[in-house]
Length: 222
Image (cartoon, rainbow, N blue to C red; front, side):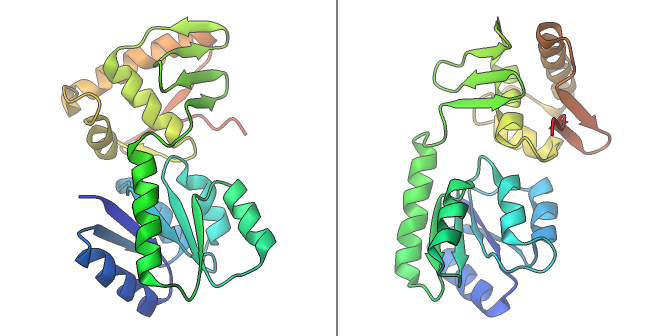
């Protein structure tokens, strides 16, 4: 079941969307502020996000950069064309203006999920001097190509798709199971250790940070 996250402080709109999406067979999770959205994302990675802009706490524009690797449809009352352009260039997959027709929104959701399933994300992922070609599965650090196991590749891909957030161990095990079903919690530490060593040997620095008791993230290079 595909899960859609609704980030909107308007309870009535959120309830309406949850009812419509549930009837269509989607799982739904909710957040009522930008700050709460990031807390939810730390434990659960949805397949698509419906993101309002005018939120308490962090605004939608501030949340959007933290959603890399997840299709985001902005659902907002703002109608300014420049706002739409900036958000689409900033990573949003689509923009729907309130008030909206639910059938149109459902169609747009279907399109974005199809794109994601068909590999509609970028062919190459980059972080610092790491480049990953998601088609050939080649990984280079600087000018040096490194050989990764299937599990190491899946771990690095997930981290590079979410470079600004901590990926919890439970989320990591759940997400990489699609590519490597043999990785268990007991072996994750070993796979991570081998991956970090290969990256460190190639780039002569640390790329992956352990967040004690929670999970892992890429080092902030900003």
